[in-house]
Image (cartoon, rainbow, N blue to C red):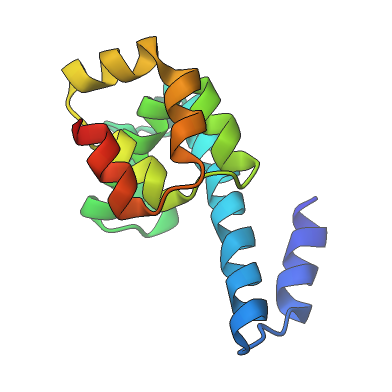
Length: 140
């Protein structure tokens, strides 16, 4: 799989027309969803500890070359998705965007609990919305 992906990336010529670039960005977002779910599983299993790291964030900084901020965001998002399977599935399917997922991941624990209780209907509501509108819905 990795060889196929690497070859596809090497051969990819990213179009600079609006429709083509939008399509590539959409596919990149869907790949980010799958990677984030893998990070969630890796974190849940505590596999970062096997390599001597003190946390998932430290592991991401060391192995992926992420900044502390980016590693924290990925870890927080991954952890939130572990309790939001409908949202995770919608992101992988390309029905919601990483920006929308980030809005949900950044809510307080109290709001996250409320979101979890109504996740299926809320995700259905979020699908057609822009990120700013998603934030408005989550505040409400």
